[in-house]
Image (cartoon, rainbow, N blue to C red):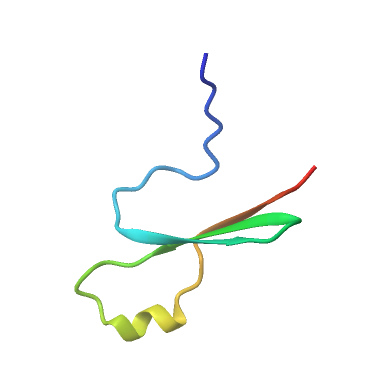
Length: 56
């Protein structure tokens, strides 16, 4: 059986995810951005959701 724990409500929007990995953890940051919006807006985006998974 597959159990899903959704941490964020599903939205039908474009965006991108940045994943930073180190030996001790993985950090995930999710951003909303649509094609057609100015690329300069990317510089000021803040994540709408982020989380970290630490190595056990």
